[in-house]
Amino acid sequence: MHIDIITVLPELLESPFNHSIMKRAQEKGLLTVQTYNLRKWAINKHMQIDDYQFGGGAGMVMMCEPLANAIDELQQGRKYDEIIYLTPDGKTFNQKTANHLSLFNNLLLICGHYKGIDERIREQYVTMEISIGDYVLSGGELAAAIVVDAIGRLLPGVLSDETSALFDSFQDNLLAPPVYTRPADFRGKKVPEILLQGDPKKVEEWRHEQSLLRTKTRRPDLLDEE
Image 1: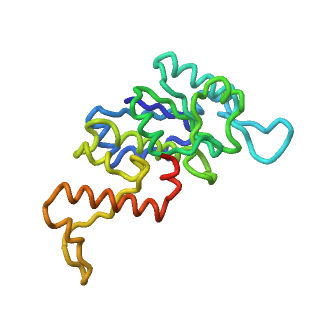
Image 2 (image 1 turned 90 degrees about the horizontal axis):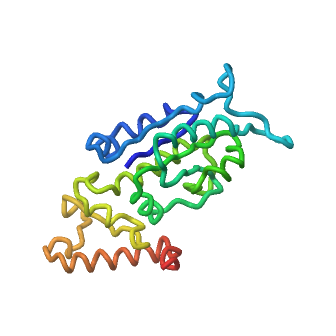
């Protein structure tokens, strides 16, 4: 998979993609993440990429021309399955969306800043708009990092145990069950006996029951979506 990211602050994305699972995914050649500084396409010697809003109001808006030129140039070398704008008013990102996007080959992510991007870019270029939650960040970079991480770990061969992602929270609209490791007795609190008996079928049944119970208790809305 290849993911391009248009950003005003590419340095914010250096750490998330240069460590842990995302680093290994790229070293294995399973994922390529390329960032592009929007100021490369700035409109003048002052590196301008934003301007005041028509109609007045606080906050600057990212201009059409730099974004359009950036997208046009990138599209000359690659056909994108989706052009995604990270924005608070987009569709809330979830595991189902991550699963869907992980099946594609090429994605382009646009990180907003200030009051966002000119609406005409959204109308002409953007094919999907994603929000990571009902709050506002200083920019779209952290949201982009979250989206890439959620997608990247689903790619075949990225995780050392390829079945691991299948049992994550939100797969099948259920939260993950409790997990335990050694010691079996920690300060008088013991691991559930069923996990120590070595019966895979019973363990699987117990985990499913615990997933249902935890989802009903903590996120009953997920069960309503089924």
